[in-house]
Picture (cartoon, rainbow, N blue to C red):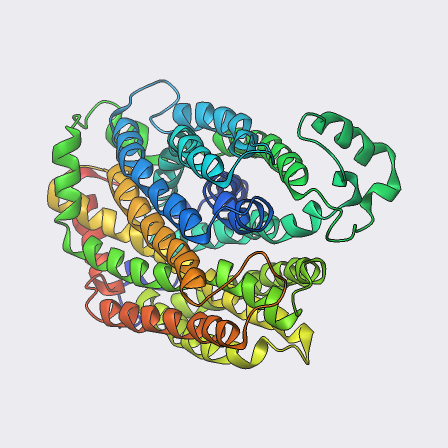
Length: 503
């Protein structure tokens, strides 16, 4: 693990020229709306819309979520490589971000352009086709955006600050992942048909009674979901533009515009994958993601069918407040773990994160309780607390890996690293999310009834805790092998600046 270094360049203090202005940090954080809603809103609502409302079999939803990563496997490396090699008066990242923000926001509502009259099989094939079109559009923004975060500062600790701001802003779109259930249940959607979306929006804006919760059997969740995605799409365009124009490309003019040669996509991906620190970092993230990505679907099932006894209206109410608690405690987790990282180093802070997360998932057995319903908000909050710490620090660690690679290969290739890392991360999340649907099928979950068997409930609760713990232990084992300590990064920065100057 890290220990505080004695040399000036690796102390806990950041030189003024290495600091990123707060407005740029906030601007960078706004880009998380695109990732959260472009990638993760859809898998989050799939259980309720395609599963509970349209009755697509759980295993087919799992297949659709998993196949999504096949499309990312092509589009992520492509846009990472294109942005690494782009040269323009506006930089190499921001032109892609501008176009991607517009198209991703406009395209989001079309992911649910289905009709309740369609058969479950037709809905399944639509899920596959719409994702194949939409996900490359999200990559057009997300790959250059994620790459840009690694270029904002060369300082070991300021990088953690950048990702702290990013993850703090991210709590806002994360709340949108929890609020959708309440939005779907509004009386404005009762009896609506899919051809009358704009009339229902007008009703929302002009009738206060439209906001009263409807009985479960009256709410048309599909039309509510379509409107929800339309609103989210407009917000995505606005924040995507703000992020594009507020953030600057620090490395572009000094290192890349005229001096760095272009590289083929095959060569850059190969050099990325043979980087040992990067492979270890991916191992940590994959182990973490596979376990925790199951929380969304299994956790929602536990809330609906165990804690709330099959009442989806009550379940959606508590799911929203779990999201609120997740936002609050996630915000608290960021400065706590950023402080630990600055005091003890990033690797020691990551070990604290993983150890705390194991304790949290053990505690979920008691926090999801039908006798004390409100305890479940602390389950969601605690998971968000440790998750905020993990993603803040692991993002900063990724920037360190790219410095290591520049010293080894003489190029800044953030796009290639982000593309490979992003795909592996999303694959881990997709595997976890899709496996959770297969688990529901395996344990006898029946979407046509409001009450599940005692065996089904027990297995969902047990696996909700056990599988993430296994992933967290594997992440700990990978972390122990990671070589880029605080002292090592000071040596790498000194060597880089001696060779090509400061940035």
